[in-house]
Image (cartoon, rainbow, N blue to C red):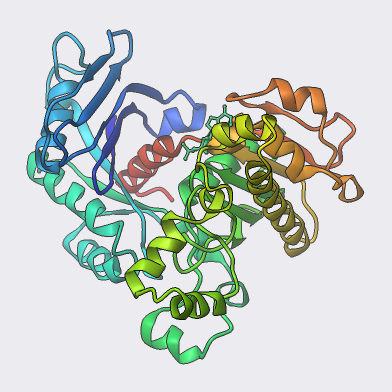
Length: 408
Ligand code: AMP
């Protein structure tokens, strides 16, 4: 069946049309029929990119002021006789929606019924920057495609298997009871994709594997996955916790926030912006949140760029070690997303000196594998280290099919 995967952000709509079924999932024969994105929605010039299998790609810069117009445009492009992938929108059998936060209510993906919708709506207060846009995407596409099932696939649900000692903060317990303050974790669809690939690569069922998955993009998180279940992950109540990211701080002493708010006379909004937008690689380097840029500057002798990369990699390394401990050993480590897939330097520095725990990177393999799946550890390395390009859309499409077929 043809599943439209929608990922709606505040000013963007990313989408893919994927042909999949239970049989295709089993045989890994699912097919991407078309993909694209509409960015800068609400600005004078939006950017539309679209490409269907075997058709000439499309790039346009119209003015798209609202998501409703953007999603209508997606359907128009999919059915366009020259550029599109299908003849009629009736060929779309279902829509899979990325939903960032499912709170404690969702441990798996769900068909969106009115009851599920209400529960997703109730999660808005946990992710006020993300869930409203995901919900808007659902409302608009449900109105445009009313007669097919729509499913919600949550970034958080994979981590609902964390034990309470991993998700409870050292705060008054009443805050958990009253306000659901706990660790949730994100990037679940990406971590799950790596686990799925590892089963195939290592020819071992997930129930026998202890794996550390490193999603290193603009947002970054690592997960410790024991026998197919997430037992810990670096992001917490929000996607701010854990690793140093493009513009987010990751772990800091919480007292710093109070201290800096007082010293710099910052309000809540400014403090939030500082932690989410002006920190991480950007904050340390004072230059950029883009790893490529920082590597260039480092090579030219820029010390702050070098420091930002060092801090980034040291945090990754610390969490790899912590999670090897949490898992009582590790069989494999996977690197994914923009930095994880493409940046040999970060992978090398993050694994440096870990031979004592069986992590032996092969320098040549690591340098030569970029942006594609492959082994980067030595043949003799007890822990197998791989680069695995992530595919969150495929996980969303497959979950949509599984929800429809009632197979989980
Ligand atoms: P993502 O959020 O997954 O798109 O990842 C974005 C991050 O990946 C940015 O920091 C980019 O600089 C980084 N990135 C993408 N390509 C490369 C590359 N070839 N080398 C190093 N970093 C890269």
